[in-house]
Length: 189
Image 1: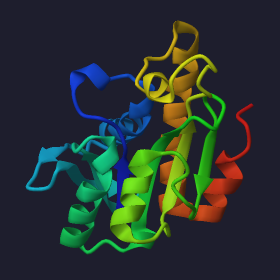
Image 2: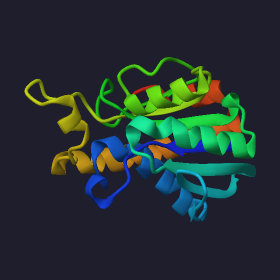
Image 3: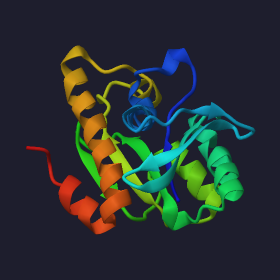
């Protein structure tokens, strides 16, 4: 079983913000593969289904970004998911808007949601799909930037990136990390 976690913040006020790109990717996969989310006893929304012949869990923590690890740990414990079966989808301010980067391991960097997961798990040995949301303008506070919505001229770029990130998750599931990295880590044409 593969567990795909999209990071974001719950609530309508955060919908379509830069920090919720992880939710957007998981929502896209849920829609494409007809996997409904159900409220559970976990601190998140979980959907069980099949993608490309593989059993998957789609997870959207509802704990707010900084406590995402709480939900991830609960779901992993309940379903007995191993770290190598986990894929986390996040926004990344260090990547240009629209770029995708697939990683097999690594630290949390400046991403508080990823840091929460690493803290709860005690290790960073899981795959990540990072979606570039562009760097913050120098005059803007980072928190304000990641909670802002995309500009009109960025919306098409990010919609394409969300779709590509979904394809990257599918490639991770079906073809493995090296194939996904080779296909998605290069700049889009």
